[in-house]
Image 1 (cartoon, rainbow, N blue to C red):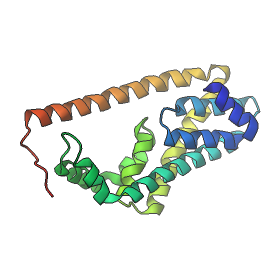
Image 2: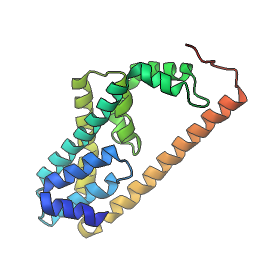
Image 3: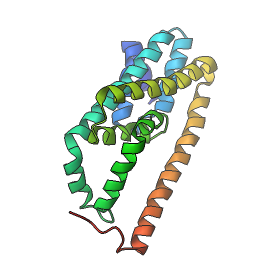
Image 4: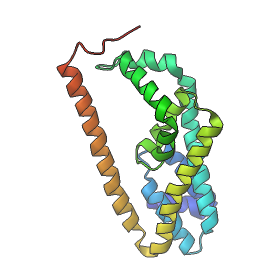
Length: 203
């Protein structure tokens, strides 16, 4: 992974780091906790310009998020409900509650979601489904991504050869988020199995 990212930056410069981050949005297994501090380290060694690294990685985040917003917009509410209603244990009432929640907290979800592993990418899809105004989505995504990216690019820049320390701590953070998400899913399934008659599907 490090070799591939370094190769992108050696070939394309700072735009290579932006491309890697755009792909990370589309394919979450690509780790931003490696790409961003490595871009900072490349800036510290003079291989790419620091400001360019910050601008291009943020641009990459926005492009990747915009692509997923487009997926959500194309999918639309009716298709989402049709697909979700066929999933085991998922009811239309669940989708309606999610819609209501996003209607109340969508702007905060998009902004802070850019700083949470896994959800960094996923949050763009419901924003597209709910047709959040594009200028609002782009503004929140740009600001949230700029904060996240700047923190980790600068950490890699300051730590230099020890940039991998950033990846270590963010990896721990990602694992905690994953455990919480899995626990939430398990709790949802347990409640639904214990109360099979609650929240019946509605047409």
